[in-house]
Length: 120
Image (tube, rainbow, N blue to C red; front, side):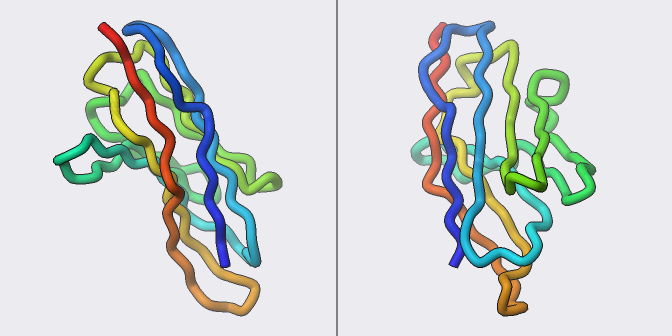
């Protein structure tokens, strides 16, 4: 069993910044790629950023230069530093992680999300 818990969301004015965290816990043997996704009600969930275990990163074009994803492999925690936030960044942000359980089984799980609201 793996639990992913996001934190750090909130209300911020346009141009402001927030840092999200996602911590994975449970019977994890090896945590591989982690990612941030976001979803607005009525829309599909979209990729924001991903980071591999050796910190190779990818970003959606809409957030390049403004968002930075990082991770702490000791703490099994991923971060998303967001600056120059825009109203269109408003969404529920979800953490996704995959890897191997201590049983050797592969897992892929989602967190429950944290809301980010950017006011004009």
